[in-house]
Image (cartoon, rainbow, N blue to C red):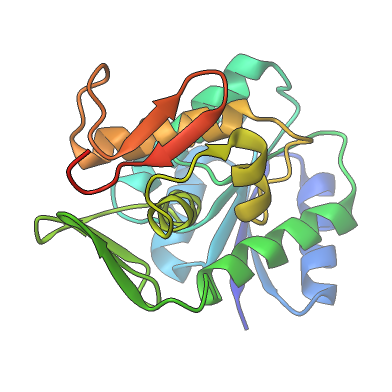
Length: 227
């Protein structure tokens, strides 16, 4: 049974989310402020987090920063902040999905399931290599020159999708479709935010990306060996 940590300062919303998750077969654990969220994460080691941003004691973005220093656990932001800037910042910090309040509890549960499913099965290919990059699908590992790169589940799926077909150009819409669970109503800036994170982790310079290349006006492709 997967454990979901629900971080929400409004008890009514926290209870609503927890009840729906419990009915769906998950174990729900609640925290109602930022410091309590950090403690609950350490105590329960949840399989996924659902977190509000407007938390007392410690902002939700700071909680995400702190957790990302120690774990790549899947994170879904659940927030009333609907501005594009907030979404981009949340995604760049490593969140995997962003749900805006008011929300449908059934839709939230569906996103939780989709994100956990992505961690279990990412494709039939086991291990493939493109130059110095190795992608190990069953273990959800990516390494460059033998050094493992820590990626979130969404970041891994994007790398695996692109690297499986080097040189093929993917539109942002195609990448959104490939990364099941990212349901941003065709919110294509989400892909840009994740690619920015991946490039940083790969050690690419902002103006000289090494592996994931931008195809202006279209989308992205993974560099072919020797390109």
